[in-house]
Image 1 (tube, rainbow, N blue to C red):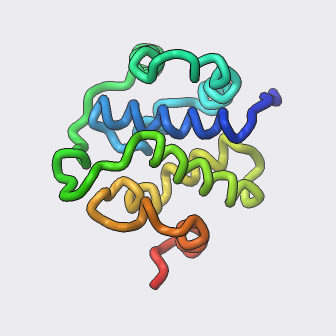
Image 2 (image 1 turned 180 degrees about the vertical axis):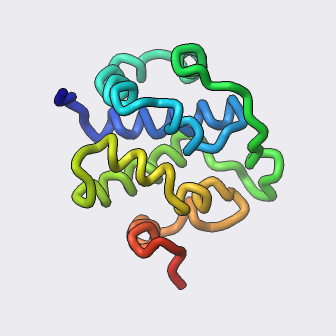
Length: 149
């Protein structure tokens, strides 16, 4: 099944993954694991409509539809600095996924690999500088499988 999507749809889905993770106290990879390939494709397809709704409403729909339970991960209260916005983090993921798309067969595979990689843990550490690092640095680190010096 081919789904038409664009970079704004990807941005919305990445931002929603971050939003749902924060609201439910889960890691972003835990949210992505709850979404099947078909569900991710569906979310990309409906992103152009869902972006007109509040994040809260779409989040509640995801929680119910995908059975996302409350977790114990909290990177907000432990943050010693200004917490980046959900959309700022969504943009980091969008750029990285677009930058590494050629490594994967489709966008869903790229989303799953990025969110399940070590770099996702690093991006979620708001006490580090990774989330606001140069996108090329993040991409090269992702491809190397470790943070580069």
